Image 1 (cartoon, rainbow, N blue to C red):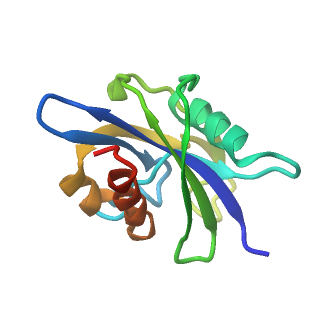
Image 2: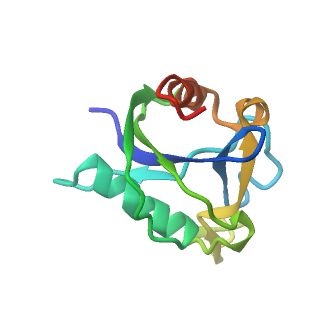
Length: 153
């Protein structure tokens, strides 16, 4: 069975456009990657968890903000590695520069025996749809289309 994740595509409307909130993964592997590296805040299911609960938990862990907004289902997508992501849309506004992410430990440099801590998300940003299509993981771009289709845009 493929790994399953759930996440939130947060969006806001400005005077002249729709913007979506994407996060950039932390850690040394992602440090110099940009186009195609950004994602919706998401995380894997634990046994017995509901997708909406996972999406809300991961949003809080990766951004440091409790999500109280209503969630609108956007369905599932399958990423290149086989992971299935169940996504929800939420209309919110938050300061992307003020996020606080949880951290993980990784042996770095490899085979050095040294554990280092890295933020799970090193930054978040609001993007208009055109820029989001360049930045987002290609498999997740379908979620932008679904957001527009449900009236988010």
